[in-house]
Structures are given as C-alpha cells and as structure tokens.
Image (cartoon, rainbow, N blue to C red; front, side, top):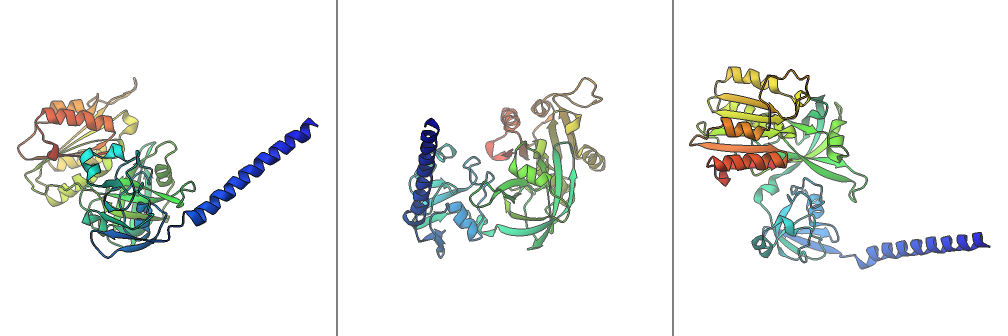
Length: 367
C-alpha cells in the first residue's frame, strides 16, 4: 500500500515537472518572440536582427566583434557600449563596472543588454575594423609545467594588422553555453611585423575552459579567432624609455613589445622586470639574456618569490615590485606597460606613483 502511494506521488511530481517545462518552452516560443529588431550603430544604417538575444551575441552574428574576455558572463567588463535608445534599465550585474556619470551617459555591458526592441548604440570606431580569422595551429609547445606557447597561421583572411600590445580572442567550444561557444582573450606574443601569424602564451587554469582548450591544441588544428583588440598605443619615440613589468602569462605582451622595439628602434631604452615563484616558472630568460648582450640599452630582471630550499637560483629574490622600487629610475620621457596578476599590478602602480609617474603614463592588463 505504502509503495503504491509512493509511486503515485513520484509520478505526480514528475508529471508536474514535465508540465512546467512544457509551459516554459511554449512561453519562450510565443510570449518571448520579439520579432525583428533594429540595431543602429554610430548613426549608420541599422542592422536587422531577430529579437531575444543579447546585444553582444546579436552584434557577433553580424560580424561586429565587441571585446568580451569572459564570454558574456559580466565578469570582465570589457564589452562596454553606450546605449542611446532601448536596452531597458541597467542591471545590478553591470553597475560595478561604471561610475555614476557613465551610468547617466548610458554606458552598458553588451552581454547584459537584451535586444527586445529597437536599439541605438555608440561603440568605438576601431571595433568596426575587428575581424574574424580562420587559422591553423603551426606550432604548440610547453614552456613550463603550466605555460603553453601556440602559434597560428592565418588562413582567411591571411593578414592581421595589430599594434604592439594588442590581443586576440579565441573561440572556445562550450557545450554549457547557449551558443555552443565562448570567447577568451589572450595577448599577442609575436611581433606585429609577423602579419601572417599570431602567437599566444597561455597559462593553464584548473577548470579553465579557454586555457584547457589551448593547452590541448595540436599542429594542424583549425581554430577561429577575432581581433585585434586593445587600447594600448606604444609611444614610438625612440627616446621614450619603456618599462615593462610582468608576471605569469603577462609575459606575452612583454615579448611582443620587446621584439618590436628591438626591430624598429634598437637604440630605445627598454627595461623588463618579470616576477615568478620558482625556477619551474621561468621561461624565455635565456632568450632575453642573449638579447641584452646584443643591446646594451635592454635590461632584464627576473625575480623569484618562493624558492625551494634546494634551488640553485643565484638571481634576485622577492616580489618584483620591490625590485622596480629599488632599480627603476624614471627618465623624463617614459611609458610603462604592466601585465600579470592584479595584486602585482596594484603593487607596481603604488611604487610608480610614488616615483612621480602619472596615470596616463601607465598602461596595464590584469590577468
């Protein structure tokens, strides 16, 4: 008797779940059908899209690529646009990324704006020149136990015009995403002059979708990327001293900038400070030491913060910002680029501000 009552109860519960699921599907199909909507960008001829998707996805579907390092999860704050019409009220997920003045001006995260009616937006003109590339992996190697270097050959289109310090986004398959993919941002480590290829250096993050995808890439794999992105603009004045401070995967743009300077303005003073935990985390050091022997104006400092007792390391130790504080003497003309973990970036900025550097002289990416 009790068993039959139990089975009836379970059957009733499952039936209710199925009914509710069906009602939700019907509602999504008929009640949430927003039909065709228009997106006007910078007063250009409007795009006609199917309503219901995010603004970020709608733009992507029309080959307009807004940067979004987190794949539309509202955690990176990169997909900033100004909404002039439509889009609804700003969401609590967006407000931490904007000042009150920016909110009043209509700044939004494209990943959080739903296209349910006509929308008018403003975006930087440079976003309109971002392209989608079909590529093929031509080399993939481990630099350390958790760092991989991967180089892509551009196929269609076969050329990219990137400024020093810019980055790309890699399309990562993701079954959990409604679209079946997400994008992850990685700095370009190859020289800007290598216009037919793009190289990245990626750290393996436990459980990370993008880094796991990159670390499993093999030669001949086909990969889709978009780019280039990034607001950083290198001061090309050969007398402008360049200070680079990085840690971990923050090495990628450092390598890009160093080789660009050595190629275009070899007389330019360049200093590289790179922080790592132990000897197991060191990579590219021999390459940069060889470069420093060829160029007296290039200085390289690696510092290790967590040495093992049996380590044979004879170089600097401790946190890298302490060595910047001790060794860096700002010249009159200077530009600084930082890339690495947020605590490192914050510590270096504090040191540089104490040395008199202004906010507009310091550029950084927090990874």
